[in-house]
View 1 (tube, rainbow, N blue to C red):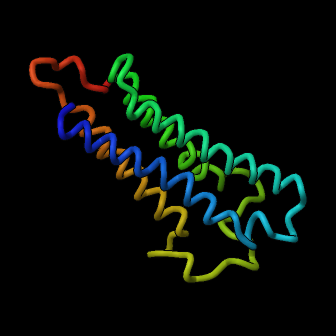
View 2 (cartoon, rainbow, N blue to C red; view 1 turned 135 degrees about the horizontal axis):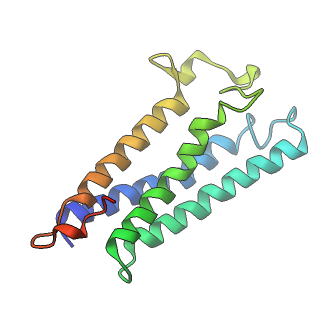
Length: 150
């Protein structure tokens, strides 16, 4: 394993662990899980999202560190799994009636450079994953076909 590939695995693993932990830190709060104004079905879907963050993160870690199988396939699976939660969060605002924050919890401190904190985190995560893709894509010495580019 080259240094670049090891670094890529570590970066993807950091994103996976961050995803599972950050989702629960953000949502296990008065603004989500304990929000008395949320109907039970909204809380059900919040639970579904939190469970997805754990399962996608575990699957990502499994593929990132898997020694069997094709390295290209494992790398692609790890990257896709690491990005799923963040892609779905990025597009969630496109659904009718959505908002970045409930009015009771909308606070200027939750924005950075005019972007909601979720957007800043998404940009950061996608940048880290882009670096991981670049590192994983570097050809192995003597084996240019082993990179992860399609």
